[in-house]
Image 1 (cartoon, rainbow, N blue to C red):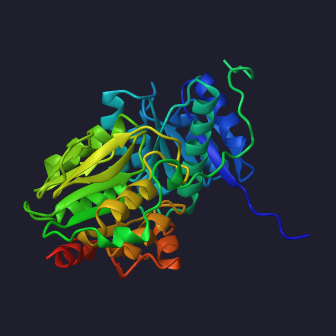
Image 2: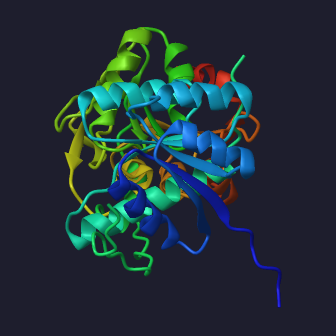
Image 3: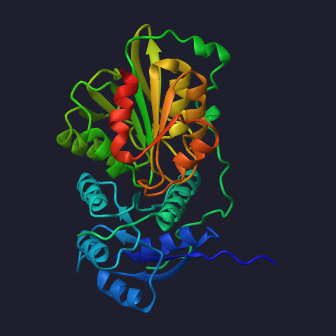
Length: 367
């Protein structure tokens, strides 16, 4: 018999007993994850960490005795452990959770709640994937229990491809009319919020139009876009259907919606729509990149950044086949070298660069 793979040990920190039990049920439905402890506040969590250091902590944002942000800062300055922030869908919570990413949290997830069977299964996929991504991440030091409350199938949902949203481009898509207008398409996941900030801050005010898919829950993407807009010379906004892709503007796919590139005459715009999880995500990088292959072709530059899994790999290969030139973030600068690695492996990438060089490389390709 082969050696059994070590399970990811998770400590759940949340002041709600219902949330703690629900998270435990969700995480233990994945055979790769083991919940090593539950804590109702950071003081209890600190005691448990002294006895056994977890591989990942899921951390509530708002707690009575010490808030999650303060505890996160203590963790990241004293003994860095991958942290996944667990927040409610509120505007205030969104801003605070985004601040947590700046302080070193790896991912944001929304608190699980009772809903349809499909909603619960999608929540399970997102939460388990976030914890597994965090376990692989390269974190750096900063200078009422109710067993009937939730029922989740252990069956893993079928991993859908972009076919579920948009048909594959055909060979004649390579004849897409070339324009002087170039468009940059970007896909990112774990670690992407900081990577995107570095990339976008390096761009001039007249940069080519950009469309981004960053895996992030709904209600967080708007706050994320607003925060980037305040930091960057380009305009950054959450994408809305029919928004034009124009010079000097960055459109970020809204959480829980697929975003596609479309073209009418010489005008490029986005289509924001519902649909199933694709490559276990909504929005999916594969969906954006496939639409770029179909409607943009050689007018596009693709960029795939840090993230776990393979979302975007097939799509970026379709872009390259349609004439686009593509860039991948290198392993050393990635928090998780999953998505770029898979894209490189299947031949979808032309250039591999450190994060700090991606903006200049993309601009040179567009000129």
